[in-house]
Structures are given as C-alpha cells and as structure tokens.
Length: 522
Image (cartoon, rainbow, N blue to C red; front, side):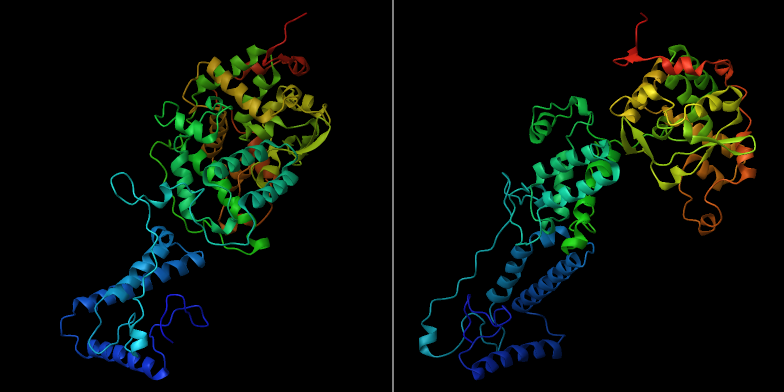
C-alpha cells in the first residue's frame, strides 16, 4: 500500500495512509488518530499552525464537495467555486500534504519503512491548473474567458446544436414551416453557438450563460443596424462604444437568454441530463433599458387617430384602431379575423372568435394568439353593428376581413408598422409609449371604470383567468348577461365616433397599397 501518485485503490481514490504491510498502515492511522484525539481532549490548548492549516484544508474540501453536489442536484451553487474545482481541490490537498506533520503521526508522502523505500525520490504533487491572469496579474473571471475553448468534462450527450435542431423542428411542426417565431429562435440560437461554442449540452453551466450576456451587452437592438455581412463578433466589436443603442432588458431576457434556456431543457427527458442552467443567477448590464409601459391616450388623441385613419382610405387604418379600442383584443389576432369568425351569439349580441388556425395563401397556418384564452369569443360593441361593420364582415365568409394585409409576408408585423406610422401621422410621437396597445389598454380601463367584473374583463381582453382558484370554476366564456353589458358599455362622449357613420366597407377593403403606399389611380 505504498503511496504513489499513480496508484489508487479499487474505487479510484488514493489511499490516505501508506505502508508496505497492513501493520505499517495501522501505525500511520494510529498516529493520526492520536493527534485528532489530542485536539478533541484539549480544546483549550492553542492550535498549532499545522493544525489550523489542516483544518482549513478539510473545511475547503467539504465546502467544495457541497457546492458540486448542489450543482448536480440542480440547485443554486457558487459558480466560481465549481468552475475552479480542480484548482481548489489541489490547493486543499497541498495544505494537507505540505504541512509539517503533527506529533506522533507518520508523514503521508514519506512513510517510515525499509531503507529501500527511503531511497525513493520524493513524490511530486501534480501541477495545478490556475486560472489565467490579466495584464495586471489578476485572475480573469471565468465568464470573461473564451467559452469556446475552456476545458469541459467528458460527455456522451448530444451537442447543443443537435438538441436545438430537434427543438426547432418541433416548434415548426406546431407553428408551421417558415413561421417567423421559428426563424427568430434559430437566429438567436446561432448567435449563442457562435459566441459560446457548440459543446455537449450537459457540459454548459451558468458561467456560459453569464458570458453570453456579458458579450451581448453590445448587440445593437435595431436589427436594421446590424451589418448582414459581418460576423456576430465583428458586430459586437464594432459597437463596444455603444454608438448604436443596445438591446432592451426584455429582449435580453425573453428573447435571447430564454430561447437558450428553453432549448437546453428541451432534450432533458430524452437524453437524461439535468438542466445545465438550473439555478443560475444572471447579472444583466445597466445599459439594457428597462421596459417602458404604454401610456394611456387622451380622448382628443383617440379622435385624431380615428380621423387620420379614415383619411387614408384603407380599411385596416380605419377599422383596426376602432376594433382595438372597443374590444381590447391584440392587434395580431384582429388582423387574422375572417367573416366566418363573426356571429350572433345571443339575441342582438354579436361576437367574434377565431379557431386558432386559418388558410393563408393556400396553406393552413396558426393564428398569432398568445394564450389559449385568446381563442374564446369576445363581445362586439353594438356600435360596430350600428355602423354596419358586423353585417359587412359576416358577408365575407371564409375571406379575411383585412385581405390586403394578409397578402404580405408577415401580416402582424406589417400591421404593427402601419399602426405606428398612423400614430405618428396623427401627431402622436411618444417614443413607443403611446402605441396600438394604448388603445387596447384604454378599453380595459373603461371596462374597469364601468365596474365590469374582473373575470369578465380578463375574458373579453383574452387574458388568462389568473391564479384565483374560484375564477377557474364555471364557464370559460362570458355569460349572456355579461355579454349584453359589454355590448352596451357607454361610449366616451369626448371621443369623436362620427367619422365611422355611413362608411362603404367594400370600397375601403378594395383599396390597394403599392410598396406600402396607396396605388395610384389609373
């Protein structure tokens, strides 16, 4: 049992005590145990430097093993300790091996045995791996290293890119081939792989995610200002002075970091590995702007939007603001309404409801709804029936109400751009604080002011019912009594609704755009 740096027992761990015979090993063990007993029996005696050093080494090893166990169990752990585990372990062992031996104990590295054993050269400790140093000689934090080349543990799990390919294929099955959400997710995953590298999925950790965030703090938030001919690293290097506004914190968290986390977790069940980013606490840069809440619109501003939309002669500019204002529904869902989505639910109470999929340019595609609650019907204010819009819409059958928008590659995105231009044309320039969502939010506020039940407000706006257990019971749709109340909510007398009287909806729908502008009359 002579101790060598290469000899190990059957469990792969070097023996703590050396010796050619069991008797010699027992002598070493007895000496060490006597010293520990002396320390226990005489706590009042001051500890020697050797004792303090050995105690500190044992404490360091216990702490390190605890943090590694936390990581393996998916709990929050000290990343810096685990990242440098091998280095810290060797330092602790050096403390144990390098201290002058306690009284009565046999040195671990140089056992007292026969002359042939004493003639052996002293055992050299293995070279420890120290973190690289910067120009001032200070250790470089792990998240500042090039994560593409840092040493990683051996693994038989698939590469991150393989996990991502499966994840994106499943999303494409759910959303449809070529869906914009899938394209965006794929592009963001590619950015992560270019910066952090493509490794076995279970070899990533929170430090990789922090490194990703640290690098991406220079990523321009406006995609139009990223040169498509430059690599990701070139774009980041070109904006280190932040002359281009970086991403907002919401895009950072919900756009880039979220898709990386979700992708990594998507293969856990099939390939049997733990969440590599579980429990990781990420620090975001101060330059990532906090989200700006949409601000409410005044009555004069709403009237201005209505008048400006009518003046353009386009059905979407004219009716989408009114629909948003009177229904509280999201723009993407309103854009995808067909004539068949409109119906008389109760006597003289009309509603609209999407099935969740629609035939777009010969292909069935998912309607862009946020949650399952968006698929419930919503009540149409009686004013929409009064001006004849509901009747006209129902005659369209399976055709889209906003057919010109639906001819575009991304109807929802185009509609959002048109609405923003409409707001600017109406003189409302609020740095994205006063947007289409402000119309929707205004309707939700008006329902609250009219004492509409909170549960009915959420269902009308397409929100989830929430965490109140009582709200989850009963019908998941608005009752007839509540529907009548919503259909007859008083209109704001300060808003000018007169511009919608006597409209020819067929004529408005027939007007076409050319490259985003109205087609010239022939």
